Amino acid sequence: MSKNQLTRYPSPLTAPLSKAVRAGDFLFLSGQTPKDEKLQPLRGDIEAQTRNVLETIAASLAELDSNMTQVVRATVWLSDIKLMSRFNAVYAEFFKNALPVRSTVEAQLSQGVDVEIEVTAFAPAH
Image: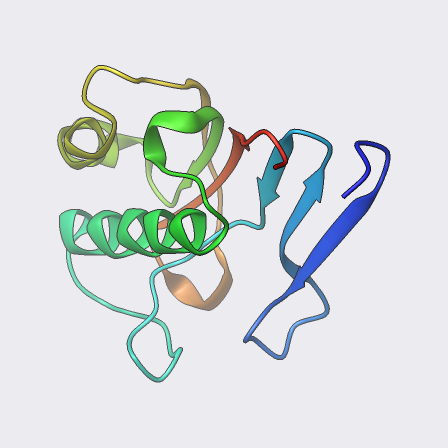
């Protein structure tokens, strides 16, 4: 693949979006909300929702020959900023010593979930 080429990876969702887009040496993943095996909104506490989202992000990165240590930027939306410390406890488990830069904001989220995360990863094209 040429470094000037964009590659779009289709989403399994019915929404008009790509699951991810490769631009040169970077992967841009669409925002991920917690979903069950039928791709329906996953309810539960912030810890369960956060774990679900980060596991899905890790799986998407693995499909695209990358991993969580390659994430350079994360944008996080929480339904209530008071959930931040509980969210951070799970988030830290997934990134350990490879913390990306991050922005976190409070927002009303689609389908009434409590968290959405989008990431950008460094993933040199082969």
